[in-house]
Length: 468
Image (cartoon, rainbow, N blue to C red; front, top):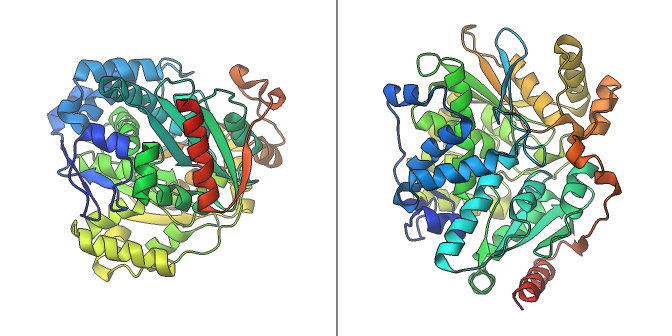
């Protein structure tokens, strides 16, 4: 299995190199050179498997010769052993055709744990084999940072620096990052938006001397391994509902487009997903694109669903590459123009192809609270604000064929957003016992202006101090 860049200037490489590189040197994102596909009988063989084994079997299609199946299965078993639900990613029925795929039973209560608990082990395996050390730099709108820190804390060959937008995460999200005192972990609160943080991280990766000196690696969904590790939970859910004989639809609350791209990748492998519903909050660039071909960035507005407070959806580049017939020059030109102007005029044929497969949906904060209240009263189900937006999108855009079930990605535990849940229902969800003392733990983080040089200086000092 080899990988190519969406912008065509980086040399193709194998899974291990893609894992450690994250972003391609040309600024593009890695995608499989050819997509693996499964036959109906191969999908059948995955039915009923424990999630760790199913995950290993799907991921082995993307690792190729870099990892043996037994090695990979040992890592998935270890990664998911600490999840609080025996099914790891349980599917909960809320209505006749409404299902919540609960992805928040990992250590930091968010869907990012599913991929990042595995990535931490993949990094360890590859770095030990190569005798190397890396510095992970990541940007977070709330959940990626804590999941990445939990996966990488105290690892001998990894330093990690996470950038988050100051004051724009929930208190639980912030404390899950800043209360980790491991010496290899550092947190930066950037005086700006998530998009500013994400831009800084990308700039560090395209700064070739800095990238080489610091041995940079990525855990954001710009890293292909993150996307690959998210595909299995859509496979598990679809198989449980009758695939490959029965079609399903998915509704995914998303800002960076990575989670819904993983579902799209599952379909690209042959899973019968009939439609994708992309759920957004007031930061609705994806909805505007899908409904009116308006891919124009606007200022990020804080909301009750901060993990989606994003206007530059990094993973859209991977879909764009496919929509443009895998033309790297056209992809590079359009992405560079978008960064320069804040607008991306997608060719009409490509937009029509996207809007035929994906439906956009956006929800206000007021309606998000109403949706949380709706499911609490109707099904005695507590949804966090992000999941609530996904559930509302599923209700608004369910397929006309009533036999097709709709799977909503439940991306975070309601206790991560207790203020919003309490405002909607009058009930304040408690943190699980392992995090019950979170508000009492001391915090450690640094505040920096939205300045690339200052952030790079911090990363360099953190890496060199730990290497000494």
